[in-house]
Image 1: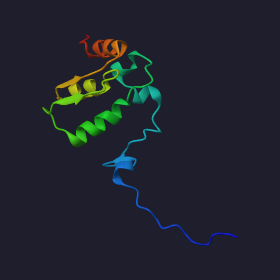
Image 2 (image 1 turned 90 degrees about the vertical axis):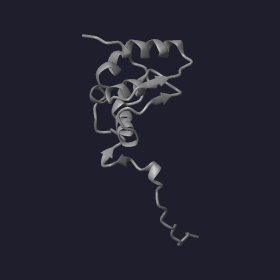
Image 3 (image 1 turned 120 degrees about the vertical axis):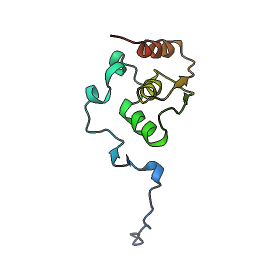
Image 4 (image 1 turned 90 degrees about the horizontal axis):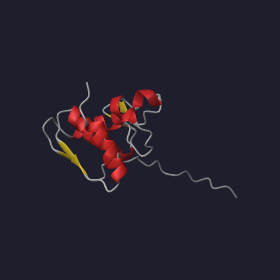
Length: 110
């Protein structure tokens, strides 16, 4: 016997939407070489954030001068993007390898 009842439409909570102020947060149509910009391409660490995603959230929820603390720093993507936006930052990471990557990415180069 078929169920003829229809399921009620559920509203997707805003936290699960795939855009923020019109920015597509999936970045599905952006090639890897475009979404992994500047110093973030120094290494193939697979756990890193897409820098543009971090940039969108920092611009939306914080302002220049706000202090950013990243308690799970990983390879330092959030720290780098925060610094580019004029937001001082610090991170905490247990992995020595990730700390090394973040330190290298944070250096000034000419």
